[in-house]
Amino acid sequence: MTAVAAGPSRAFDDAWAPVPERMSGLYLSFESDHRPEDLDLAFPPATLARLRRVKAQWDPDDVFSKNFSDGTA
Image (cartoon, rainbow, N blue to C red):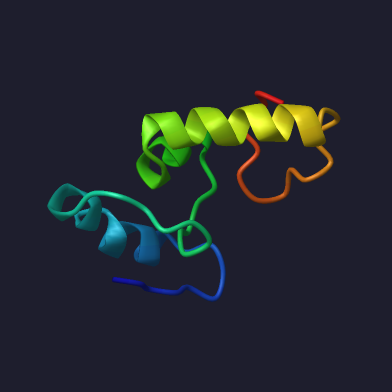
């Protein structure tokens, strides 16, 4: 399920609030908020750990941080 708001919207956030209670997971770049903890919903633990190792190696200065930087690099 996807929904799009043109910008920050309390009405959108309120309407969307019950949805996560009825589903699991997250497809990145289709969320309305960029919270680091959402990475745990998007990736299994072993995959996220591998991605964090790769990012730490290839982007130690956190240059690519505009989407879901969790500060572990």
